[in-house]
Image (cartoon, rainbow, N blue to C red; front, side, top):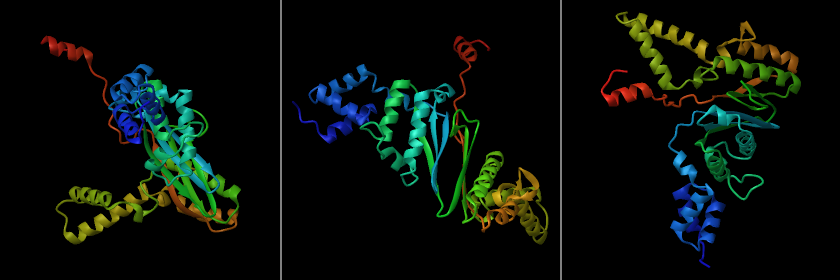
Length: 309
């Protein structure tokens, strides 16, 4: 019986992307023969994950999960929307979001965490799911919000089931006020965020690159104006821009006569205490991922034949 070392298991995992326990079992079955272990995994259908890794995964699900004063939001991608409706995939995403509550809000800590009901990590469990379902899947991003007092409200748009959907939002309200009032307000603001997609909480949160881009656009549109006039145009333009894209300055979708900031101030009388909107997170499924366009087979065949499509 060969001595199966951690280094051997690691090497086999890196070669096949199979789960740790599967790699250990493969090496044990083949008496430590690496090539035979690879074949063993292939026969079991457990090394498929490596072949899927290069495929674009832009579908999937966004999950929200909360516990007390802590909440997480997680995006897990798949290649097709069909997989997003798979019970096994949904169960994995939901469980991974729960596990994220215990971590530090990074994908690395989530991947390394133990997956309940198994002897594997979250990362290994995902590799097993890839091998079983036959599509590339990725743990794309995760965020974690916490408040010392108050609530973290959530909202899922286009939900396929409770807590899972295409757009997910978390809103953190810090307050010692009535939690029922805070919960209702927080959900309304979360729905607002889902609809308007603000870039930051207020102007101070807008990154400098975005400000520079907007400034350049304003200058180009008003080229030739004197410097003193240009400065006023830029200042006024940026002020208008911040009202459009920062959450606290946006007109509230449930009552456009008020800004979100004004709604928060008015809510303090109902809550009985000051209310502060500390943070928000909005994930829209697949945003920022370049999707591969389906090939035009007619054009491709015509090109190969030297004909026009």
